[in-house]
Length: 408
Image (tube, rainbow, N blue to C red; front, side, top):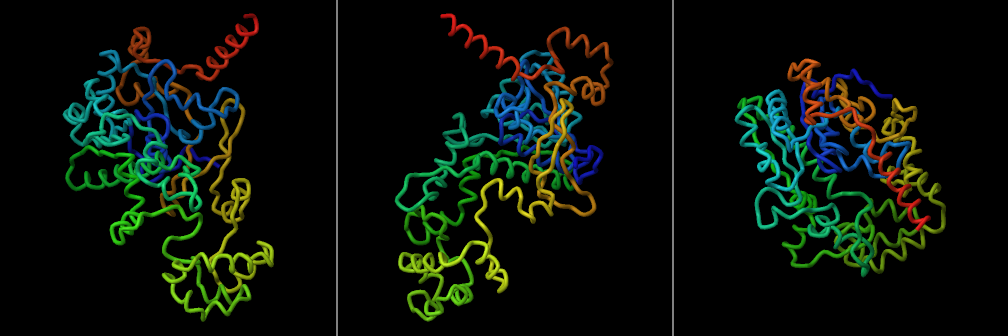
């Protein structure tokens, strides 16, 4: 269940979120779930392009729904001087500004960290990009799969001798999002001591290098190039308590085999060991082995598909998948925050916002604008909202194209 009135540990924190698609919105989702007031600043007329990413329920993108739950949305034209002026005024009231544009974009708009920090010296400015604010590739655009390929993770994912494999999630984006959230929290903590804000520079490629620390350490230590090895661990074979395991599967003879005496030797001779273990494990069902391994305290678990993971008793007990109701009359089950706090718990505040749904409320509350002033900005094409979902317009366009092709 959602609780729109929960007081998470970041309650009272105001975040202006210019990010779009995944890496930045994932970071601001973490902050929102922990209580921050996250205000998406979206561009007219379509807003975050993730709003048009399927699958859909009605005119709502479930992709957008899952990572923008509980946030607010204002629609502001930053190409107009008046729009940029409003953004600066909002930044004066904010604790954090987030963006994931190509480096230099915000500076060209006159909204870079140097400008905003002049008006708000306590501001934390978080910039997430493909390659960071410095270096020869800083101006290059990037996608998740590009930084996964460049960082090396795809070269060690998959079966031996097989082609490079992309992990089944957008790990490049999500990792950068998590590091962005961590960096923002660290900067906020430091601000408590110094009273000063600072700029956070997160590179998606840097984050890929960081999470592959063991692969790089092994390479520099041995000179051997890491390769894909399937589900096997590169340093421990099998990745369990070996003696208890061998006794339970009926192969105690393996315990005294000198080839398998240590984790390093077992890894060296994995080609001889794995077929023996696989043959022994085929003698019973998965459920039988889980019971036996649990009985002796051996770490074990089933290889679940997504539906099975969703039904797992531990996942249910931790309430990690919760139903979020939407005002349009539907609900969607999505993953809750995994951060469990006993005194100031966070959680999903509610469904995602319509484009520009909170424009009037935010401008009135933070800037003190009157209804008449907001109307004048709306009439001038500076602010917008709430606006209809772009999915409806896309469907209408697709239908017209289909009809035209039928009559051609």
